[in-house]
Length: 83
Image (cartoon, rainbow, N blue to C red; front, top):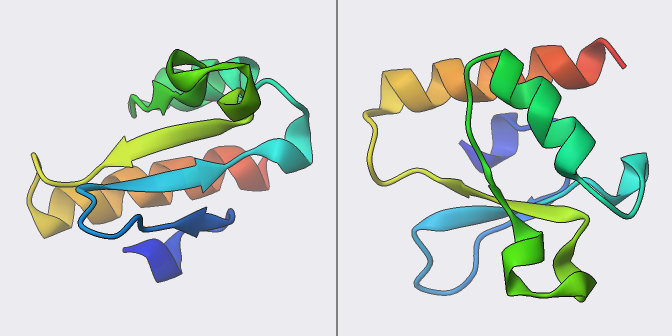
């Protein structure tokens, strides 16, 4: 899944989520997360972990099957492509 996402991300060791880097679009990812939410995908803002993480978000992938995860990534990519 990570390789299909058109934004930098990393998989923390033992993590059940991708740590997605939206810093290309500014130091606060909330406007981006709102656009992605409008496309039907919810990501957890990194700001919950402190100001240093405001440009990042968590994409949890353990609660959905692979087809649904792929659809979510496609939706995220469409939002990014429209910018």
